[in-house]
Length: 258
Image (cartoon, rainbow, N blue to C red; front, side):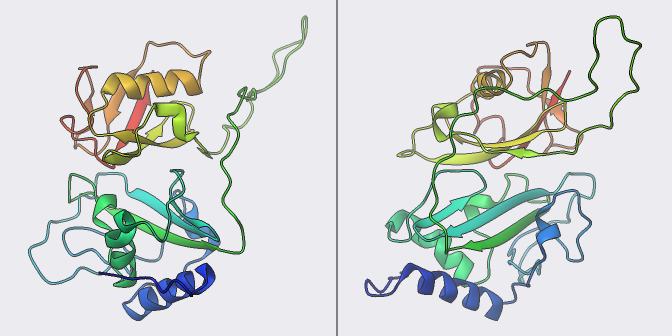
């Protein structure tokens, strides 16, 4: 078991984690590596025995699914704990987080970040912000308009460039998740190109994902289809009562199609 020295400062804990991860092959990244659309110079995790460097440990492995979109996760280390993607703050001292931190120290991809389909490539980024304290983001009260502006009686203006993809911070309570029970991260890619990451309990349903999207986009129509991008070819999620676990949505990417 990994036991933290109670006299060690949080910054020293983070320093040790990064040092050990590098000793086991983790590579120094660049800011642009955090952009999921950027072509990377390293291979994402694939198969079994995934490591932070992208290498595959010996053992039975699965061929990476070249047709599947890579699943990206970002672990951010703060002065008061760490977060996974846009999930809640997690404590260094919580025993429930010991296996996760131990995997990082060994230079391995934490098991909870591995998709149900082991052939789907995974990228894990580690970001140091241990000079900052994590604070929950306020709930967005509106969604700013995007596109070209028009006035009454004016000629149609030329179409504006398609806005760049963005990842939105999602409030922890936006999905009604219970942190005391097993959770998983789901990346939702909206039809407008926006990406959102949210935590769900394994017994929550496809309908909960739809409610989450409708809360994030209250003015949008409900006439859309959700696709499980981890399947190849992607499969529509037609049963709203199917649970996250039974629908094979653990650490999945879900696409919205209008």
